[in-house]
Length: 328
Image: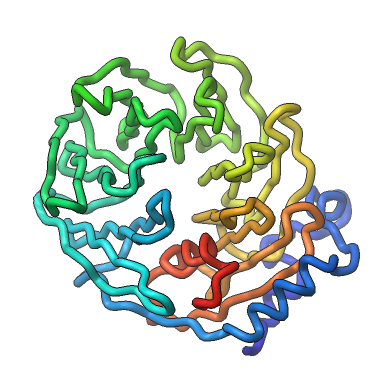
């Protein structure tokens, strides 16, 4: 599979010039034994597949905690769930009920049968794959664009276009707290210990709140432009952020310092995904490829070339959660 020239060269947005963040954060050491082994695995299973999922573009995808199901949310107002069977995904069910686009979804952190969707229709819906029905609809104040489930499974946080984040009790389905922010809120996430809440914002910052007190702890100037996405690794050692500056930053959870940056994308970073063991980090943008790096060294691992007709880059990026299985 050919590697796009853009993937190997400097960023088109000028992030690799003298004095730039990329020039001192990028890692250029040789491949480790782990990298070489995984490159060999990818060479042996280098095919990519597209699966018809929706009648309009896919906005969000996520794997269940047991890795058996993949859910997708779409502009067509529906969610779909696929079941992983050996080397293919089989569509299991379609979930209807929202009156507007399903912009983001996520699974319960420990129950592989439950997932929740956030929609522009000012509701969130909790679904059970065993009954294929919506088990709860929660009304919110605004058009919802992002959602996450706390690691302990007790709370769902949803953010809307008015930069309001609402915390909903996952059992009673009632609002526990609500926070209005004075800046553009992008993605939201708890840390793995469930005692801090992170937000990325339009000023390039990572805002950290204590949880459940929701008191400001720290604001980190992470990027010179809009900080778009955030993802914690399964091992709890790192988290990563993606920005409009086309950089991915890797942060130490305990020290809250940037340990390295990845600068091989040319467009704003829209989505991130760690492998199940936390050793690989995939990032994607409007480029027609996905960058996969070894977390500890930054070495280039693999790039998937995507056709312009691919459903969405994050649909493929999420497959990295099962990258150690010969299914790609």
